[in-house]
Length: 183
Image (tube, rainbow, N blue to C red; front, side):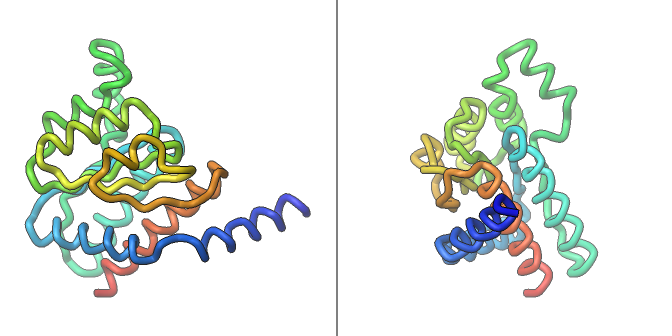
């Protein structure tokens, strides 16, 4: 029972500390991209890869079904063939940056998701997106890592607990989805 109670208590504490203005900033960035008919591209590793997919699934589907709004969204973790081809033939560090080179246009929105903020493949992809004129808004945890300094903006979950950071990232994605269908 102690682990359960502590986990809930830690969530409650972090919920009070998250910068809600950053959630609004991300929502506004997404709305801006939708209005310009630009792309939203998400990516991350491990649990953040799943969150990357979940964001796109929720945002694209719900905006279309509820509001008849077209969102051009994709997650760079969805094509295992292309991921393994780049990992094998180029480098695992470049599985996302290589995709960014062929998919990102100026003013697209790239959302790197990394709790540590130090994943080499996420850092390289974010740098590449910046160089192509995309807006980069990171979902970070811990102290933000190197990614905090590379993204044009970010939201930080101020926790050193991997699972709490991942939970909060997903929660923020759900809040954004609810705003997309409410406004």
